Length: 216
Image (cartoon, rainbow, N blue to C red; front, side):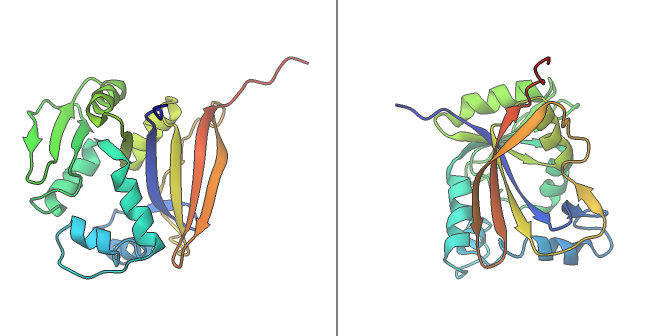
């Protein structure tokens, strides 16, 4: 029996609930905090190979988790803000190697990159972007890559099936909260798995619609 395609996201989060420092990774002090948040990713062999950073890197459970996340992803969706940041930071061979659908308000033709990534710009809303990504992903899953506002739109619309938070033992004090503005009256989560690795704790949840209380 074929496994149903899923829509998911995976993010790293500080212990006090932030997924990016105040002002973003390139703001004052942001690079240090961003490095602390993502310190479980940067040393991994998969990460180094995917960004063409040269040989070497760690091989272990964290590397396996990172590789499995990319292996299950047949297409990605992201917001225009994340794309604009990435366009300046990604290497010429963008690190997705699948179609990427950018939710935007501005028309733009497809932007193919070496290595199999093509960015498609969708100005018809989040559902149109997801429909296109589902069609491109085939038997694999669709990842909502970010940023936080785009993930939250999909979550509140009931379009997320599953997500994983890599909870890092760092404190930001301020920054960008993923779940700020979540429609808690409609969105409920159920634990699916917990795995501790040397640097972070991976918390995986399924998402369901919160049921209205039955009349007494």
